[in-house]
Image (tube, rainbow, N blue to C red; front, side, top):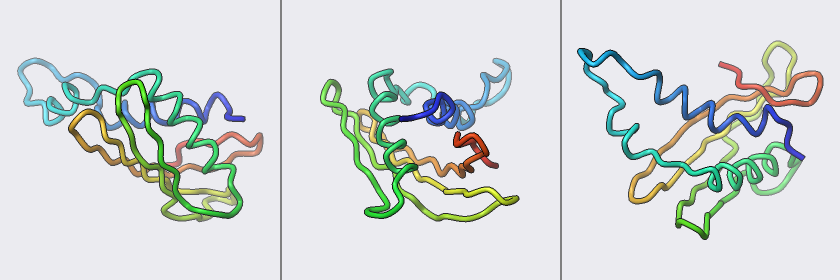
Length: 122
């Protein structure tokens, strides 16, 4: 089963990628992304399940595909590498998302801490 922390990885990655809303006088390089990036709660639930399968796998295919039959959104979560950081077991995952007609990619390094949770490790 996924931990609460693991369930929050994708929303956290989205927030990191989108950053906070800039002042109106500033140019917003993420304006198109904010307008077009419409991941739904049902998308996140599916992504969380697939992510959990990949993080808990000890062997087998290093990627998992997902599709939301309600809206056609889909993607792939792929294991890019396994590594150690400060004594922790770590993995870097690539999230390729197809949302409506747009494509998004996020590479997120994660490390498993003592209690078994996976935390983003930048």
